[in-house]
Length: 454
Image (cartoon, rainbow, N blue to C red; front, side, top):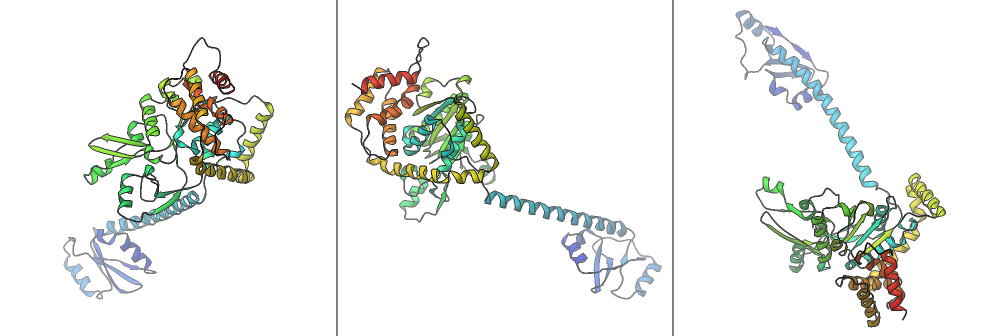
């Protein structure tokens, strides 16, 4: 009989072997009489070779509890145990390193945010900035369609505007960013909870900005059935889409002229009505989807259909700056921001705060703004002489003029207010004439002066 004695320097080896579960896989068991001495004795649960008479005699002669008997078949198992223990130690060290790395990455993610270019530092592009500001003041204007050359700062300007806006109060456990006070942006579930007298938990978050990629499907945009709950729990549940996440925020579609027409229809319907209705796979859901729809595109890549273009409230046409001094200023600002984003943002902190305060005051003042009936009549006369189909042009121009008046700190709309916004509201609603050499914006301004100056 082969007798093996193992002298352990500490209890740590024993603990690691037990922790790794190796004890239960070995054809041996422990018999310990002292902290420093450990003997392996054959595990009675595993069949051992029948000992011979010589082996039985040696076993009886050995001190009880100090030694153990092992069959020859147990020797390979002991070697495997040593290898497995070494592998377990290496695995644990790698796991600890991964946990430490993940913890550091999560800490950096929560403590640092991606710097955004300051809105007040953007040079030029007055049409685009004005259109975005007016839509933030009055989201019922209907969104903005931004068409222009490549590399003119369309996406940068939109992100800068979102960074400018203050945080909003939302119901913390609601997936639709429901407001605790305004019922028109409140889901039905939150309405029922509020009607029952429940105290709604609140949290403050930045105004959401959702980017809609060109490859998005209708299920991802509108929402669909929750497959995970259907498979694991056997329940029909709704998984909110991008429209739900964009509620009370901004939905941005880059290259909207390349997006599928049926998706554009869905976006425009939800933006106009403020609600999204989903009917599929036996699920009927209606949730708030009040957002500002902002689309951008390059006219060289194609135009939107007129009936879709008409659904956008305003249309901003931006061009590349031709003034060399302005171009140099833009290049220097971009370089300074890339070298030191934090320091660059601090230079424009006061200007950004002034913009934010002005927008908030305009939102509160909007309800007090009045439009003289004569001005409203002249707006409709301009739309009529331009042969604009429908009444969206009249409605949007009146709303945009009121928003501009509120942004300027007044409560009475003037002719100048209408002149600032009427081109943005009517340019894209004109009928296309291939023989007409005059730009749409110039035509609108010409008719506006003829009506309002008489």
